[in-house]
Amino acid sequence: MTRFAVLAVCLAFAASFEARAETLLERGDYLVNSIVACGNCHTPQTPSGPQRGMELAGQFVIETPAFKAYAPNITPDLDTGIGGWSDIQIADAIRNGRHPDGSLLGPPMPFEYYRKMSDRDVAAVVAYLRSVPAVRNEVPRSAYNIALPEAYGPEVVSVREPSRSDPVAYGGYLAGPLGHCLSCHTPLVNGMLDFENQLGAGGQILDGPWGVAVTANITPHEDGIGAYSDADIARAITQGVAADGTRLTPPMGFHYYRNMSADDLSALVAFLRTLEPKPSP
Image (tube, rainbow, N blue to C red; front, side, top):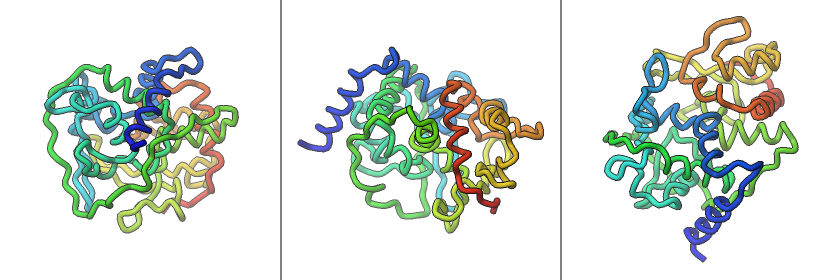
């Protein structure tokens, strides 16, 4: 059986499975518009939030010394979006970082996390992307000053649904494969995320329509959230307000994270408490 055949079986199984009386489309709507926050990159951003009428139409720009990346149009537009892609091809792009022609997508798409997204959640995201209005918006190709790898790891075709019985473990799934929180909140060293030594310590510099932002330390260190209560952490995530009342800035996706369920938010906070305390770089 080919990898596409296996992936097709996985997506079909995921599409037939409904958890907690939640349809696949409802799950996709929840994920895309809360913890996964696809629009935080794939919707053009203004100083006041996502640009209305351009949801998921792309063109948000992230520029670093290593690349100038344009988030592509992921609406179902046939000419400028993903309307001509199959469900399997969309899932393959999310998990394996691959275009339908076999070429690789580049960073900052967090493939290291999306590779671990469950079959059902990938299928749910695909179902939701199929449902949004098509927007015609031609987006420039990203330019890279670094060589992309031949692949982002071994082929991923199936990932089981995570258990929600352990809030900390499920919070790790929310922070990793879904929310990719640590992709922004971990420092870069020589252009690479220093997961090994500074996981969650913050310090990335991000330039955008909001101005220049430096990502926060989200470990339980005194430089980070060590003095925050659970309510303080939840408010920072969903409202963009620090424990001392300071307003936090984009690109933190407050417009999306405020839609998280109380259970998911609680699990995410529980997971952040377990990170090793690290000083800010």
